[in-house]
Amino acid sequence: MSGFIDVHGHVVLEESLGAAGPVCGPELGNYSDGTTFFRVGDWRLDGVPYRESLFMQAKLRLEAMDEAGISLQALSPNPLTYLHWIDARDAANYCKIHNEAMASLVSEHKDRFLGFASLPMQNIDMAIQELEYSVKELNLIGGYIGTDFGTDFDDPKMDEFYAACCEFNVPLFLHPAPSGLDGPLRDPRMRKYDLDLVIEFSYEELVATSMIIFGGVTRRFPSLDICISHGGGSTMLHRSKLRLLAERRPSSPDWIREPGEFDKELDNLWFDCHVSGRLEFEFAISQLNTDRLVFGTNFGGWDSGAAHYPSEMLKKLNTNAQTLLRLDTAT
Image 1: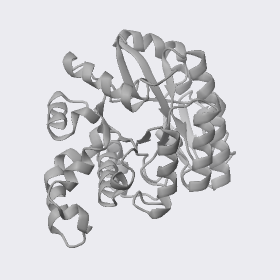
Image 2: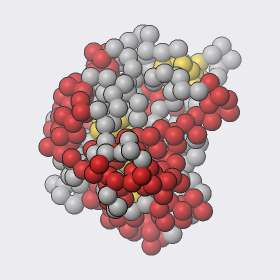
Image 3: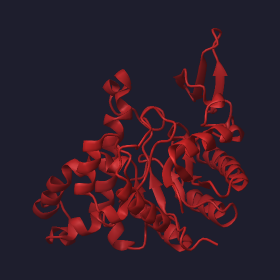
């Protein structure tokens, strides 16, 4: 395959607008001065013209992909619209409409797009049902969820969901959403200067990674492919200290205290390499298993781009993406 395989490209789907009801939306609109807004419940994002951008215009996305040398892109839900904390039935209805629209978009551009499914994670049984429908009936490639939905990643209630991912042979992608929009507000200071998009996301990715490893998720489900956004956030910075935590603290499970066990399980996780800076990328590949690293751009987003990645590494990232996304076995 010529060109890059990008696993990190969010979309907003016209059909999904209003699908969670008049209170939750989502809604696209304009203020009296013409400024656009995107509303989810009581939360608003001002000044982003989604409808006129590549987030909603496939033609514009394809043109930008061609310019960036991206041959294939895995499309994913906008993190502003996970809706993991609303009524479960409303969430399930929203996800079904969203995923059917995603499948329709992908089917129109089968050679350029793949699609991840949005899942109602506030109800694990409903999430499994929607994942099965999305994979088996809609031909989507896996689940795409937030990092906070009321059930911790190490909770035994998640095991049935993990088992379903393995049974359906699909990856699970984790990407944070801003707190206060989808779940409790973590820290009011994060609302200043949009710090939540960097600091809070990085924290959430570190917590998710840690809960998965210390909770033995990858140990119980060795065939489960979980991919975490942005190089796992702060995970790569704290790898050595997390290793010491695993081996030395009495709260750690007995099995992870054995030297090498923490690293073994961390290296079973996947990460996308959207870390923005060249030095950060070099540090990421020094700390993460490069056999489990895939190319990601947050395509069209405020921090999109990956031009600094060396070409020889991009070839490896493509090979990895083919494995993660099951492209080698696709018919």
